[in-house]
Length: 282
Image 1 (cartoon, rainbow, N blue to C red):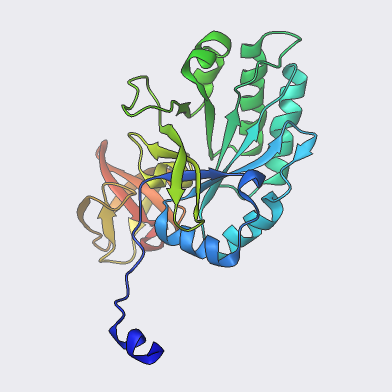
Image 2 (cartoon, rainbow, N blue to C red; image 1 turned 30 degrees about the vertical axis):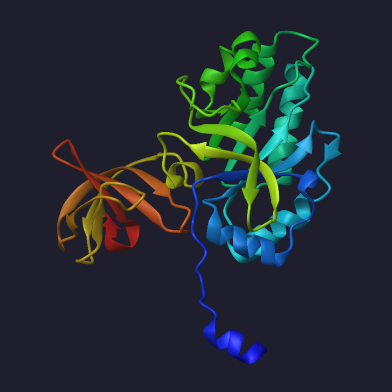
C-alpha cells in the first residue's frame, strides 16, 4: 500500500512568500531542514543577536552558522538597552562584532532606557558607531510610531530606513521600509507562529546589497552581451554591452548574489547597472 501511495503522490514545490520572519531564542534553535525550507519560502530572515550588550541570544551563533551554510540571507538586530551615548556606542560595536557578515543591521529601540543625556543623541551615536564599522551596509531603526516620535524622532532620520511595528490590518501611511504587521504569522518552515514583516517601497536587493559606493572612474566594455540592468532586482533592462563602449562608473554596488555592479553614466545620463566583469577600468 505504501508503494501505491508513493506512485500517486503529487509533489508540491515550496512557494516564496512575502512575509519576513524575525527570530530569536524564543523560537528555539533552528535545524538544517528548517533553514533550507526558510530559504525556499521567505525573502530573508532577521535574527536577534543580543538584548543590550550583556545578554547574547543563546541560539544566534548556531542559527547564523546554518544560515551561512545553506545560503539563507539574514539581517540582524539588537534589542537595545543603552543608557547613554557611550553605552549606545558599545552596544552598536558589540552587535557588529557578533555579526560581521550580516546583510544589514537594526537598532530595535522600544524601551526607554536612556538615563544620561538625551535619547536622540544616544540613538544617533548608535548609528554613527555602527556606520563606522559597516560603511556600506543598510542600518535600520525599529520601533512603534508613538514611541519613535516621542523619543527618537530626530535621530531616526539618520538611519537608512524605518522598520515600523504596527499590528493592524491596514498598512500605516508613515514612511517606512519594513512593516512588522503581526506576531502570529504561521511560518510553515518552522511549524509555528512568529513575528513577521513586509517590505514597503524597497526590493530585496535594497536590504541585502550594499549602499552605493562612490567610484567615479572611466570604464570600457571588454565583453559584449552582458545585460544592462535598470534595476538590481532584475525587473528592467536597457540592452546589452557592446565592446569598446566607454562609460563613467560613478558608483558600484556589492550585490548579495556576490557580484559587483557598476552604475554607468554616459554624457551625464544614467544608463544602468552592469556586472563589473564586463568592463575594464581605464
